[in-house]
Amino acid sequence: MLLLYEVSQGNSLDQAQRGRVISQERTNAGINLILSCVPDFLTEFAYRQMRPVRVEVNDKMQKGYVYFRTKPMGRAFRPGFTPQLTPKQMLALGVFGGKYMTDCRKEFPASWFKRAKLSPDRARASLNYFGVNASQRLAEWRRKGWLHPDDPRGWFQWYCRYYSGRRSEDDLRQIGRWRAVRRHVAQLKKHCKPRDLNCRRRQRQALLHWAYDSRKI
Image (tube, rainbow, N blue to C red):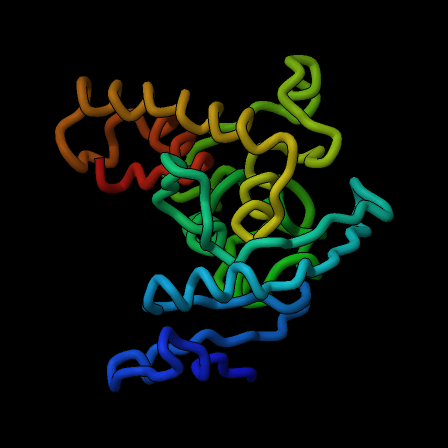
């Protein structure tokens, strides 16, 4: 682990700042900067110093696809893009019938999959948090033109890569799609009592697929 706490304004750190460090952690997917509770000037320094991390993908749907992680894991999101759940949390809750990420483990941190609800053979609604199917078939996503060639599995794959530090030409479109899903939040608030998880379970499950924590609505 490499600690980067020897950098400061005026070449000195106060006692509180000494306990706030920037570290590098090696994962199966490469090196990811982890920033936690650091002063703004240290965060900005780390962003400037981070070297792009090359990732090559070879799974069932992509062979030889290469991208670069240029931002720290889980940081430096576009203003207004504020997902309520991380990919790790979504996988642990149960999304997409457990069939979404079964062949992508090498691309992302192993910790994401420790408690992930995955199905090795087919999608199972019972693995979803709300126990219902809330997904359209991939063929339907293709027919409607929702998929970008870089992310053939759709929005969640884009989000996992964006969260991991990749930035791409498709970011604005995908963030716009995420914003559009907010209408379902409004519908739940209108038709359901607060935190009545049996009310509109399919709609609640669909919101989980877009990183909205519908358990709290």
